Length: 551
Image (cartoon, rainbow, N blue to C red; front, side):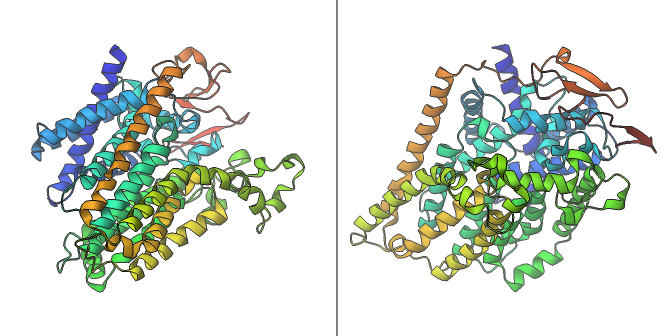
């Protein structure tokens, strides 16, 4: 019980610290919502840790200092923590923690390399070619940098899970506010209902979150707001969401490279005035340039590539080019054969894998395996769309007042469909796993739904459309029921194993201290030192100018 209370207390402090940083930005733009504040605070924190890690480890002192500054900023910027709506949000966050974490387990990727990377951030400053002892360190997300801020001797280790749950909870609160808002716009209403229903039904377990959740939520948030701006266009563009396009692109670069093409959705609202304003906004441009430079430099130091494992971005004569399993060519090849589903081929042991991934030799296997899984994932969303279509069709002649959407046309939706399709096709041809392209798949299906039902949506009374909020409520009930049912029948302990005791590891190297897990726990989890369960035999550690290099 004490562990649960400790984790909940840690989650609330983490939320307050993130809001503190985000509220610095919010103070100058009063129309931003709480979810935007959380995105901004999260990004600012990640930026700070990314910069600091070039010079020092994110140890207890650094962690507590950054957390304290965030909480102090909360009060300096006069954020009202006693606001009734915010207090309700805290209650939902507590319930979200209990429902999602109870009898759950961390995603396997988290235990394999997400949390071990956090251990590396906490124990050492940046190390050249660190990916030589664990090639997956090259696939890391900005999430791990922010997580490292909140891992210290004073917080419960389980607090490492808090950021994903904060994002999940507050995005749903944001959707709830839009759905139950009076005088709602039909397209924004339906878009929010569909996205939130999909999130509750198919991404409704903590084990499904990983590094994929935050980019999906951020992409969905900006999609909603881009369409909102298109619908309610104003003569003044000082608060245009378009101004965030560069930072959004660097945000996605630091989370999922496959999501960077989602930046194209901003072109739906581009015009000359907004573009000039963006180019003149030195804060946005400088933030984008510095953050992107630091992220690419970090990648280069740790992997010898600007974007690992894309071989074209790697520099062989760097002096620390990765070798063995971590070799960019090998890592890229391995990622591609897995993404294209070679293991689903009944004759996979006899396949020529080099030939398998060429052209479309892989497509039939993928179509009969992973594509079926994708259909299963989106089936609830499609079913909801079919029911909504039938509902709209039934009331098409019973409207009393048509909904006028002068600033959104079929042409706009076709343009948006084209922009999303670019990312969708790049995802399909290179890394067609559902979790790498969730945003493209979901938004593509929803836009198709809007195009097909455009006239029906416009010609249906808003008060009738608002009755469709029932789908959000049903999905929420499904989410709660599914997780409670999971807890009842789970064989897991109530608290997921996050940080095993030190006797589960053996020391591979002393300075810097590098450890490896025993067979009992199998993979590293969160630890006190750099950990790898795949460190190559005989690796060397060199030291030059007070920095380590691993070969």
